[in-house]
Structure formats: C-alpha cells, structure tokens
Image: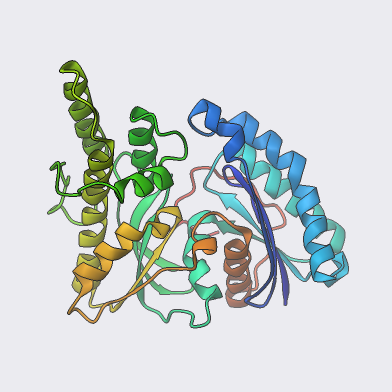
Length: 335
C-alpha cells in the first residue's frame, strides 16, 4: 500500500511516501530560522510557512519517487495535538486530496506518530511495551499493549522536558531551539557541579519541570548579583543531568512495575545522547531493552505519521473523511 503522510502540527512541514512501512520519501522543511528571532514558535507565522511549502513538498515527493497521484492508496495526516492553524493546513490539504482521489483518509494523533516511528526500523517492536514520549510539547509515559491500545501512566503537570530546555537556554542567551544548544554546551561542563532538584521522584510516573527551571534561573540570578562569571557549561550539564535522571528513573521504574521488558523512547528529546546514556545506565542488569529511533525519525516528520496511519487503517479499516483539527486531543482518545 502506498501511503501519503502529512505532518504540520507545529513548525516543521513534512511530506512522506511509504510503501507499506518502507520509506520512499521523507521530506522535512524546518521553520527554525523564521522563529529564532522571536525565541519560540509564532503560530500565525508557522501557519503561513506551511501554506507556502506544502504543495512544493508533495510535488517533490512524487517526482523523486516517480509516482503519480493515482498511485497513492491512503493518506494519513496529523490532526492532533498541536497549533490549531498549523494542523488545519495539513488537514485541509489531506481532505482535498483524498476527496479528489477517492481514497481513505486517516487522522493521526501526533504522539502516536512518534511511537510508530519505531515501526519503520528493520526490527519493529513487539507488544507490550512502555513508551517514554519526550519532546518540546509533551512528556509522558504510556503502556501500549497493541495497535492503538494505550494507557497513560503519567505525564508532566507543567512544562514538558523540551520546553524546559528552551526556557533555560533562553535565560542563558543560547538561542532557540534550546535542546541541541544545551546538549552541546553540556559536553564541556561537569554534571555534578551544581545540584538541581529532581521533582516528584517518588510520586508515581508524573513529571514536573517548572520547579527545576525556576531553580536554574534563581541560581543564575544569584551569580549575576555578585558579578560572578556564569559557568554556562556547568549549568547546562547539571540542568540536563537533572532532567535525564528523572526521565530515566521513572521510565525504567514503569517497565519494572508493569513487568515489561521493552522501553521505546521517542520524540525530539530522544535524540539527546545524555538521556540515552542515563537510560542505559539505569537499565543495566534489568533485562530491559531500551530502543530509540534513528535521529531523522526522532523529530517531527511525516514518515512516522504515514506509518501510524498505515497501521490504523490496516487494523480498523476506518476512514475519516470529515477529519477536524483537534489541538488538545489526548493520546488515549480514540477516533
């Protein structure tokens, strides 16, 4: 089956073509340079940029794969969660194409897309597994027992991990996006130099990063008052360690508590090598297998959306011709 995937949930426009689960094309147009000046994503600007590039990417996908519109048998588009205006661009294009081509349309929840990025690897995971979804907008632990069978075990009560990275980076004047910049500078620092709090460590699988962010800011403010040079590398390393410690601890604990031996780590922050190192260290001697997707599939992309749509249609044979953009839909809300 040839599946067209469309991803426009935030600040990446992506189009993919899959033959079953084989990636034929996976093009991503990032908007980072357009949002850097503002220190974060500007919703109206994001929508405009999606409109400008999406048709070009579709044409490029067909040209590079030597396929025609008539070859497409299924369309999968992100419809939740995300920026409403951005979601509407992808959903509108998907509805128009599927109506014209008379093919099924599947709406994909963005977080399911991140989980299904793992199903594009040479050895797809087997059920059940624990999923740690960690990105700029979401941080949660889920238990997945089958295709689209999910239980949310815990999630952040305030900032997502990636959001905390962005805010700390902004305060350190490192620029946007903050995750890669903090990770790079942290390599030069000592993760034990400063002890930052690990919030809610013994409170189930819930997360909170707002207090950690505040602790970092207060530390910086205290140094500035005494005109002490900021040890930016040590701050980044210590902050990053506080984040990865708690992510690794709770996700490995979830595997142990649920007697599940497979942990899927996914989302933009899953590309962070310090997180992977902490997960490997904390899973040593547990027989828990920690899986991360290839770097190109960690961040937002349409191949993972196409894969999620392919498995949804294969499992349920359902089409969503009246698809709507639902910016706040939960991952466990089945449509």
